[in-house]
Image (cartoon, rainbow over all chains, first blue to last red; front, top):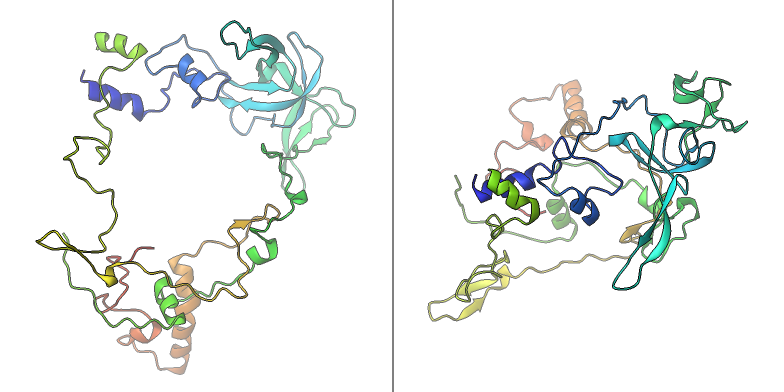
Amino acid sequence: MRLTALLWMAAKSAFPHDYRYGTNRPWTIAAKRLNPPGKKRRKVFVEPIANEDWHVLRGDTVEILSGKDKGKQGKVSQVIRRRNWVMLEGLNTHYRYVGRSGDYRGTYIASEAPLLLKDVTLIDPTDRKPTDIEWRYTEEGERVRVSVRTGRIIPKPVYQRKDGIIPQQWKDGPKDTSPEDTLQKTYMPSLKTLEEEVMEKLNIQEDRKPRKSYWY
Amino acid sequence: MGVLSALTRGLLRGADRMAEFTSKRGPRTFYKSRGARPTGVLTSSRKFIPVQAMIPQFVVPNLEGFNLKPYVSYKTPAGTEEPMTPEKLFSQVVAPQIERDIEEGVFNKENLEKYGLEKTQDGKLFKLYPKNFVR
């Protein structure tokens, strides 16, 4: 096959259907080194879970049911849907060296391993025991997670931004438009284009006409 | 295909033929512009005459009392305004006038220009189609 055709095929489909998704994000260098374009690995079988049935969200507190840290509770830091994985903060860890160069063996850190969804359950917020979860509708029609054992609603975890900014506590800088000015509605719908309105406002007289040109 | 797949497992051989051939590549006699519009006319004696009309000029209005700044505060909640569609524009700008004229009995199908609807884009400075201005 020609080289150009091969290069085009490599660039076109970003990820083939049998791409093995790992803990590294697919666009990082580490992921590209583990999964270069031509590589084929043994297939991993992932239980198909519909989007409506997925009940663990980032920021939830969950309990581990099996594995090294069985019985411990932790907060979900990352969810990888492609493999039904859930990564908790500081739990299910193994230790490795990071950043080695030359003779220096690197920093010894704890890195988390992912857990499958079936090895993890959500926790009832009031009695802090693990429960089974169902999606049900409230009287207002809102879809919520309800623990089967006690019937209590488990609220969605508060969304925390990755850059650590809490919008309510944000202090406006000199270049920030205040919320009142941003939400002010000043648009008057009209049939003129922006350019015509600006010319009218600034009293720009334009009598020249562009030369007639043809395009096909 | 087998030989090539063995090669591609490591490093892809050869240059990238599909890369854009910009003015930074090629021999020094190769000239190509990067898209800047000309601001004058080059004469036959290789002298460049700048034309004032081709040089863009910024017309800045008076910004007193203008409160919008480059960035938006994080405290702003998401807006609730729907995007403007042609149907909404028509129903807000043109439809009330047409309804008023129909009630008075003055509506004339031949005279739609008075509501702002144009028959042809020919005499206009800013044509909508083909669009002859850069936004």
